[in-house]
Image (cartoon, rainbow, N blue to C red; front, side, top):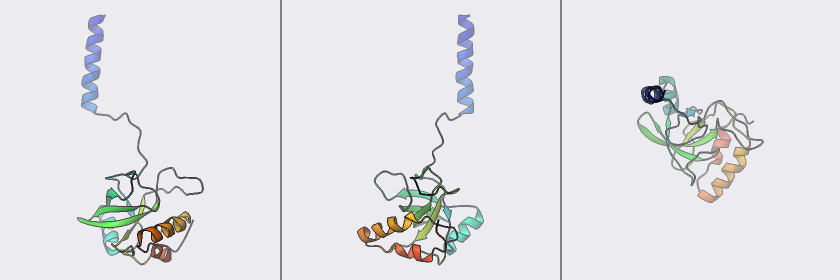
Length: 153
């Protein structure tokens, strides 16, 4: 029996090394290397989404390293680095903040003005207060994103 257990344990070790399956839970948060969906009509965003190569998040501009609604992120899109604002997330949200089916981003330039002229998806109304607070503290004008949005949830 002892010999049988050893053989069985060796087979389990070998089997788990071959399969390389994960035992951790799936993370539903924005962190580095998370794929995002560009929801404005900027030229670089439309090309990347049409080619099936959505941008990846390479940095989040906050202290925790986990992106929330209204946070500024640095994305790699078509071999370039662009900044963006998170406007919709898949992760569980605070009460009265909607949960989206995809992780949405609006591309901006260094001054905070959006690269596109229209946002195709509805954005949460809580984003108004979040972006107004960040506009006053950072100096960049993020309220232009609210101006080009056509629908709010």
